[in-house]
Amino acid sequence: MTVTTAAVLGALVLAVALSALTATALTLRHHYVLVTVAGLSMAPTLRPGDRLVVRRTAPGRIRSGDVVVLAPDPELELDLDPESAPATDHGELWLIKRAAAVPGDPVPRTRVPALADAPETLVPHGKLVLLGDNTAHSTDSRQRGYFDAQRLVGRVVRQR
Image (cartoon, rainbow, N blue to C red; front, side, top):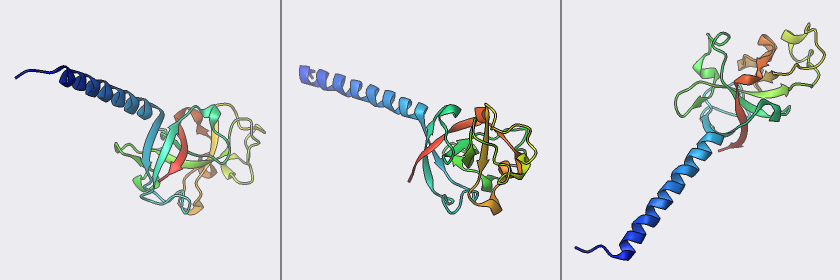
């Protein structure tokens, strides 16, 4: 059995193509994550079973109105109900909310009772005011006040 030059070149091209696909997949995974909605906190905008593409991003790139995903604070989320959070494809529970105010925005005192007596007039650096669209099924800034911006996973860029 002889190996032809064409067969060697074909195998080489295939190996390069597979390497490129692997590198592309790793790059995409580094910048994006696919999330499946499991709870009702964002209904009717998002419903259980909806699939979301989330772009990993820095807190400074979030704007009021963006739908965001963040990792729960283990100290605050001890009572996290799997029905109130989206789940990644890897089973990790994350929160999904809408950014109502970001650093530098006025504190929304009338919409967020937990911040009614906040001493500052603007949302401080490193904090986010997050609300679920479904007030009856959302634990958010209305009850807990500010969320730590460092827990941000990213911003929802597409619903599938």
